[in-house]
Amino acid sequence: METDHGVAMKLTALTMLMIITMICCVCDSVYSQEEDMLSFKGCSIIRRAFMSEAARAYENITGVKIIVTGGGATLGIRAAAAGDADIGGSCRPCLPEWFDEEKGVYMTQIAWDGLSFITHPSNPVNDITLKDAKDILLGKITNWKEIGGPDQRIICVFRSQVPEHGGKVSGVGYMTRVMIFKDPNISFTDNALFFRNSAGVEEKIEIIPFTFGVTGVSSARKRNVKILSLNGVPTTKENIASGSYPLFRPLYLMTKGKPAGEGKKFIEWLLSDAGQAVVSKQGTVTVKEGKGLKEKFEFWRNTDLITNYNSTY
Image (cartoon, rainbow, N blue to C red; front, side, top):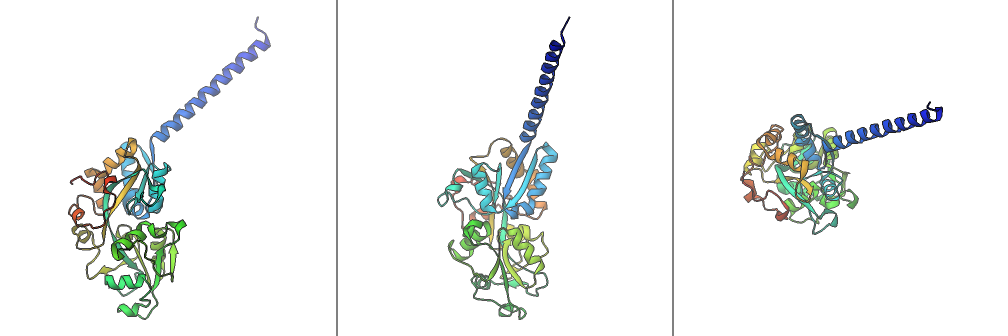
């Protein structure tokens, strides 16, 4: 006859087996969920322009969820390099020759954007010349009446220029300096409101009259802001795709090393006709729609790290 002690031992063993089985099941479930998930961090312009919609579309097709967060282009590049994100988003090239934190990253171009000058919707000014925009950025023009507008102080709203917030190499900051001033080290006026990312710039301009800022048109068109024409050329999707609007620039996804695994599958889908249709529907110029811009763009950098630089669309 089995003793009480023996029964207790069997029950204890059975209980332990059940606990171990449950733990294994939970671990398998968590592992499975992680396998069916990607993370995107970085450029606020890409995030607002089309990444959230693309992530939902990809999940509907594949079941793979993509967690989308902003934070800026520099964060996107460095998060990808450090392995803190599966995919980073950036509206500037990686600069491994300047920053160790950006080494090991590869870029894949997924769309075209345009730098745009924006103001509050109530501002009667509709157009700006490139010269006047440069003088506002440098603090040489400080009143809207100097460019044909009302007698109101220009309230500049910029990306932060301090190093801990990306400094002069934020996505918009770097490309504005390089494309407009041909000088990545030039300083803009300090008489401005500063924000850590382009989302902050756009949100502030939505609510404060007579503001002025620079951002990507792909996200600005989804805000309640006025996008100024440049030298008489409206910042339409068609004008960016044709190069008629001069301040066009590439948008990138970043990966640690060349794309691999589920990240590669997502990037390939985003560059497919189905993925690019999502991008286009949101008002952003696809690589195919802007296929003539590659030869016109003067500011390519580290093209050996762009996985699809030699592709034809």
